[in-house]
Length: 597
Ligand SMILES: Cc1ncc(COP(=O)(O)O)c(C=O)c1O
Image 1 (cartoon, rainbow, N blue to C red):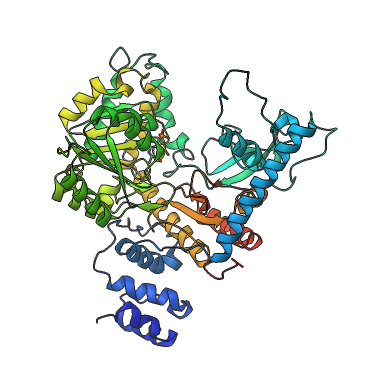
Image 2 (image 1 turned 45 degrees about the vertical axis):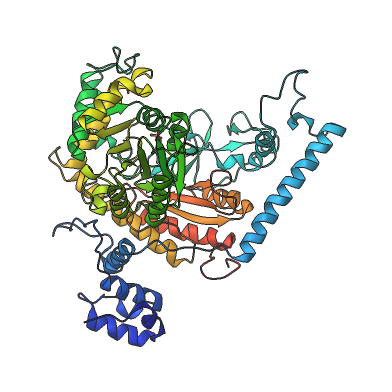
């Protein structure tokens, strides 16, 4: 049966939509009578979409319990719809835009007033920068310095929170409570033994514990780490044995770059594994994801070449592009039509002044954009690159291991052959519970990079112990450990992410990104809500990441949730109740009303 167009669907009544669903959908959702109009429309649109989601679900065996059985149909329909349509666009309400600008204006004015009184009356002068030595230019840029002292310091308790008790990136972690006795300028770890004579400056309560040194820690659900596959949580069952066993035969550090005496057999084993996983000739592994971009890009492109970069690419790509000396143009985020336009213009016009053709053109994109929670429109981008005969460089830092039916990243998810991407870059910091980065490409490119890329010739190599962690994680993901851990992790990550996204959206929050992506940014807008959201979540035992200007545009401050396979549905349900409370307190339901209430 054919489904009416979206505009017709919107004119139908709820009862009509329900009857349409029951005649058009197979299977008919069991909770059909409870679904609201918007959900019914989404289901119908999704069932009509021609392009199916490429993230297949691992079916639950008969002896397994599907924790999301009650919402399974809706989750699948939403994921299918999301795979075939662009992510929702959220427009800041006039009220939120006005109050956001007002908030920054007040903070900046008050900051300048405090600087003025600090300098003239010596009130709070400790926090006014000392006059630079005569004849010497100031070392720090004045605006950054001002921003740090007068804006960031007010909310610095929301950042750099130390994690205690060896919990690392685990889903259930302990975060050290900190106190400040100088108006948040400096923070120290709260200690019950040392601070008895001082007023308690943190909200004491059911989540707090005191460790053996008297330090106060808060038990939190971690919604901020990139522990996508939960290797931090089940490390003792999955990786510990291999990693500890290698300590006897490998050093913690090779104390030498790869090209000198820093290549261990585990580096080569990992490189062969990465290449096999991605279907490329070979791979190069380096000690840091950031440096992989920052040092590979200048080795690949230089003066006379052109980089065409997505507007929202990560700063490591930006650093590499700037260091390369190549010309850089940007195209609108994830927009293949704009890429087409920029490419056409670049090819027709050639280099500025001389008009000679560019030596080579490289397009740079990411698999999942970490601040947007959105995955790359890779199929169309590949088409455009092929049409113009230009190279494609794909950063899979957040998508490798986290997307695609078998965790092979954005290419697998979008149904793109890895052969159509010239350079695949990725990191081991996220899904693999390790660190470092890789480049997977054709043999000649990898051979060239081994001797030309600064990461390979000047940086200390990746720790062999960490190599083993990554090798074991790969084997788990690929099922080569003989268990179902890997497929269960991939399934749990996808289910948890989609459930969390669905519930956050149902709350009326402005959630960015696509279904099937584990990153969920929620827009906060106002600078005051950055701290309020973080502190209120922390009070309730939720560790969340908040991001403000200049990391994101001034109007687009956000909280960014990262979901993990290590979370359980109970964890998420509990967190969602708390997030809903905080959303009410901070008036964040902008999808429901202009004022967010
Ligand atoms: C897209 C992207 N590329 C590269 C990196 C750098 O990776 P690493 O943290 O492993 O150095 C990140 C970090 O989050 C990232 O988001």
